[in-house]
Length: 427
Image (cartoon, rainbow, N blue to C red; front, side, top):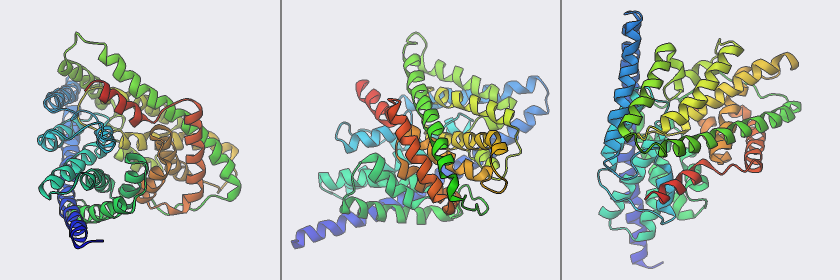
């Protein structure tokens, strides 16, 4: 390697480290703002409930206004609406470019308004997209060559995912498995540098505890692996249906050409707001719901089924509002619901002391994620880091294998492949 190449290598890693610090600051700040928005929303809901029947209109108006404002903000910048992960993947494939310097502030403000108002959207999409945009800007300012710039864009997107869920290994696996579909030593090193610095900077803002920490979950006996295999089949079928509903809802909304986009967003927001007035657990990203389920839940099978059905529809509907917001967090909550419900229905058939609802919920999070995104390793590593349930590795591997195979056999394409194609067709 020539001295010039060595200097180029050092510059690329230095740029990755500095940009990772900025990703940690921006992503950590975004999470901090969302946490306070959740507290404010809870206070508003409490106050509106005290007003009686008329007070229930307040959350409806709140979410409708939030969706409309976030949609209006996102319209001003190409690719700012939706998750943004499909755009990060398209840039890696050289099918799209990062055109606007306004992407980062629009994604931050629009995502904060949309998610903070209660839409069923995840924080990870905006943070991944903002991280990738930071990587792209840093590459230009650091005068990196085109290939290093392309890798840094993807690497810093992975750093964004790591910050979103306090999951550094998940960010690395996400870049290799989902975004790029390749494992290159230089890409891995750039991602490691960006992820470590991003998570380190974000920890003073959001803390270093697992996002969904659970008490120690004992490993189920080996004879239960066929049970988790069948469970993974059901999760894969659920994921395929959810993926189809996400794309189908977008297609239906696209045909409503006479309805202005902002009006459509407000209408969707009002429906979600009505659900929020009925029960806040039916809306939002889903972390509070997942925490409750992993802690034991206390919900009946009927309540779990209703919550699952409502969030199954509300997630794709919220995504169709064309505001900034991701799919991961609602997917994880859906998986936790499916796992807890499956355990409630199957527990009479299982011997005592085999696997509790928390084990099924954790495995369900990764398996439903796999059925939709088709990235089993990302799902397994992400959920393990988020919950700390490392003892469930064999059930996770078994269920995610079954979920991926089932979704493939049902002809369901990975959701981000479908979203990327839609984005490129409308560019």
